[in-house]
Amino acid sequence: MQGMWSHLGGFGKLLVVTILVFSSFVVISLLAVLAALPFTDDLSFLSGVQGALSVGTLRYLQIVQSFSVFIIPSLLAGFLFGGHLTRGIGFYRPNSQLVILSFLIILFSQPLVGYLGTWNSSMQLPEYLGGLEQWMAQSEESASGFIYRFLDTDDPVILTLNFLMIAILPALGEEMLFRGVLQPLFGQWFRNKHIAVLITAFLFSAIHLQFFTFLPRFFLGIALGYLMVLGKNLWYPIAGHFANNFLSLVVFYYYRHTQPEINPLEPNEEMLSFGWVIPSMVLMSFLFWTFFRKREVSA
Image (cartoon, helix red, strand yellow):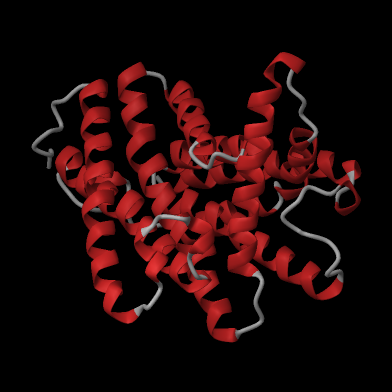
């Protein structure tokens, strides 16, 4: 079944996706704020000043954003372009072995990802771009502080909410938009799946506005993109994305309880060893090859 706007070209579809994301964000965010007003006395709720909002309010808005920016626009795009809300963006019954392999590929990529993060964090721009570098550093610090406020808790209820908000919803929503909608769109536009993977990975990393961790996120975007290319099923990059987010939570809480003087969100050379990078690359390559072979057999 074809969607009613499946005939549009790459640029036309990109324009439609942009309108869907913007419209969904505005409408759903407005409804969410209005719905929350009777339950909060926080007068700064409508001010938009991030630092003035309570952590609970920020968590609420973060969850709303996952639905308004990523999940709902992606489902609508699936219906308009592919003729089905879920199958239109690549949701099919997954192979359980390929789901596990997707999880393991990203899990064993972590030493390489961590090394790329450490290298990226030491980036220095030319002196005449000092103002830009300062803005990038402030953006990185703000994003890191924002996430730290979410995570720094021992409350079991909040830990469960963090698991939903950090590990599950971003893995689901971001993959729906980037690998389910944008990557096929760019593939159609440029008629090259590799260019589509690279462009989508670049946008995936850039949208976070964390420039000193751009490279590891770009690399993850490429890995997730090829899980979609090889597997032809959105559940596989979702499983990989979940692996990355889940491990990040585990590492954060491990260091908060064992070495509280360390901020796990900041790249730290002492936490990493280059000796693990080569094994990480070898294991990733082997697992990707295994993934491809099993996908060919099950196709």
